[in-house]
Amino acid sequence: MGRKPGVSEPSELSSFLETWGSDKIVVVDARNIDFAIEAGDEKTNEYAPIAGTTPNYRPNAVNLPYDRPNKSMDLTPLTTDKSTPIITHCGGGGRGQKAKDFLLANGYENVLNGGGPEDKECWEVFGE
Image 1 (cartoon, rainbow, N blue to C red):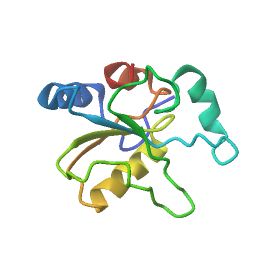
Image 2 (cartoon, rainbow, N blue to C red; image 1 turned 135 degrees about the vertical axis):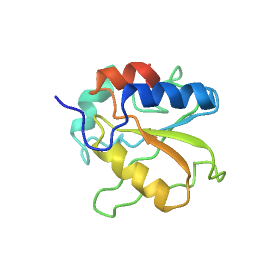
Image 3 (tube, rainbow, N blue to C red; image 1 turned 90 degrees about the horizontal axis):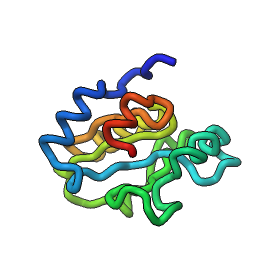
Image 4 (cartoon, rainbow, N blue to C red; image 1 turned 180 degrees about the horizontal axis):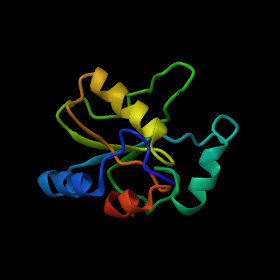
């Protein structure tokens, strides 16, 4: 499977992590825990649990499902500091890109799309 449009290259993700530090980066998981809404998310959840569903997940990860029909996300749980470095992801990068675009449109300045667990090369950089 090729990399989806908009997904950052692993080298760009590595540079982003080096610049900001992994402890400062917020990872926005755009997958949906309601598998009736996004059935494909159940597959990736098996080997890469959705943020907030297990106690040992990345400490700065937050689950903000991208709502396809409304083309939106609830940003309430996210920091209001628009300069916060953020990496978005979903299963493979499609909704991750939509989440990135939504965050940029809402004033967030430092956002990359990391793809997701289906893009193993990128996932190894920031997801594990």
